[in-house]
Image 1 (cartoon, rainbow, N blue to C red):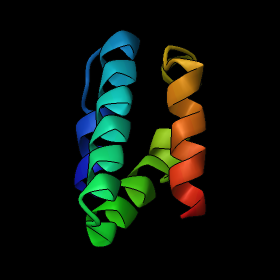
Image 2: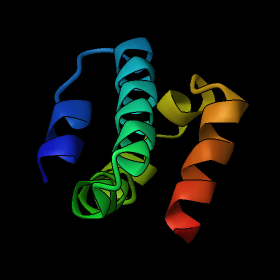
Image 3: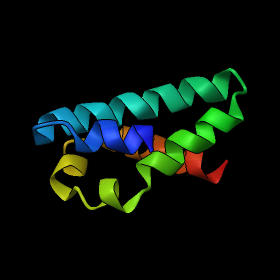
Length: 75
């Protein structure tokens, strides 16, 4: 729940979008390092309902990052 907590506690939509983008980047790095456990935990945190319902924040995340997250979820 650490990932979700950090995102939800951010004070603005822009900060939340930047944090979502950051955690996707960290998850991609975990994949490169074959750290599948942390990859799973990060994607689970990003998919918690408390994070997914932040529509305006998700609109601020670039589409390539959203696509990358979807690819990571398939793994």
